[in-house]
Length: 398
Image (cartoon, rainbow, N blue to C red):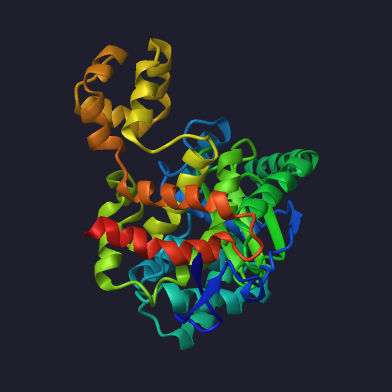
């Protein structure tokens, strides 16, 4: 068979004839990066600032989250910092950009990479790039003032203590983390020229984030991940952004407007509520979620699989889902479902309205086919996906 893969020039495609050994080139798979567990105070400071501005953001039920809300009631942010944050927001500096800027605090070497990210992915920023250095300098000055004030407080010292404990626990689990990364690399075989991560920092748990939330940051060859120490699935998810996002980047100049729109239409509505209509974010997320939620668990995204799950659902399991899964809860409320029996009666309706995911079905089929050939030396997930995705998408368009 012949596989098409992207060559060195953006948008150019070359063919690999997998039946002709002379035409096959072994993939230079990325090496396992240096894995560290280091505090990055810029990210923690920005989370604290966000909590001060939005008390209901993030985690709200833990003791330290409640103490943080009370602290900022008594010690609100200064007017100068609040005005500056409002100014940045009004000029297109979204939350993600501000987090990236915060990570420059005590890491000036990241500034150039941060500016490159903003130029490539944040066209809505209104302030000219020639002024970004000054903007960043002022922002860092504000973070430094906050740092001195907050972390000298009793609550700040508590954050420091819990952070250090978290780091020590991560060090104890370091072999498990290395295996997690090693296994993902073995499956996807990321091209070393595409995923250039040399240093991977699983930062200590941010106690203001919800347990099921996380973030991935990238500066050159450095990847930083915020993920709860107990949420292994999310640790996988965030690492895979460093693998999947650069692959999806290569589709930008190849997909037609119609194909990009189709990706957005095929994505599940629940995903669009969280990530908007942009095809890029939706595709990256679905590629990762399909692997974590379906492929890894040896399930399928089809109705038959969902029906079997519902038929085996006990009352206590049903109630547990209602407590832990807001989307499941919303679906049950929307269809007036109060118990497992009612769910069984409306299983097709529930699936069609809240579970069915045509984009996931496409991606799942690609994963299935890739799994059969991934051990061939000239094939990795990148060239297989880029060779097959458009064809599968076009079938759905028809």
